[in-house]
Amino acid sequence: MQIQNKRVLVVDDLDSELISFCLRQIEGVTVVAAESAADALLEIGRAPFDLYVLDGSMPVMDGFRLAEVVRAAGDETPILFVTAHMSEVTEPHAESVGACGVIEKPFRVENLIKRVSKILEQDRPDPRAPPCTDGLVM
Image (cartoon, rainbow, N blue to C red; front, side, top):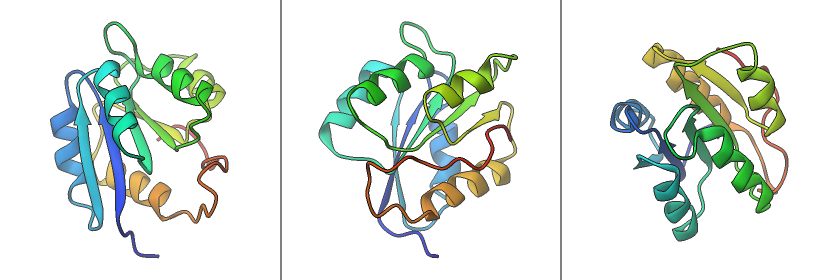
């Protein structure tokens, strides 16, 4: 399946530009970068996205709390966490907010691109349908 007209929001206080640069290699994807959860919420209010790539550890509001906020608002957009702070609670926490997965930093660019492409290629005719559930950690 070819990816066409997909929008990805990358939210990371330190690496949003690096992650965005990597994801722009995927044809058919528009990437928007935000450096805080507050900026992300503004972007989410402007236009819908097909995927959120969230840093699990940011100041003020981390990616996990941001995921809880968007889920509480009824937003079932798929979520992929990218975090340097993996622990025994990271995967269960990601699963509890319905995330598609967790990629540990530092990551291999090809792994990130592969995982994002797989998520974006999924057929979700109803955007409110639950996102992917094919295993969390990569």
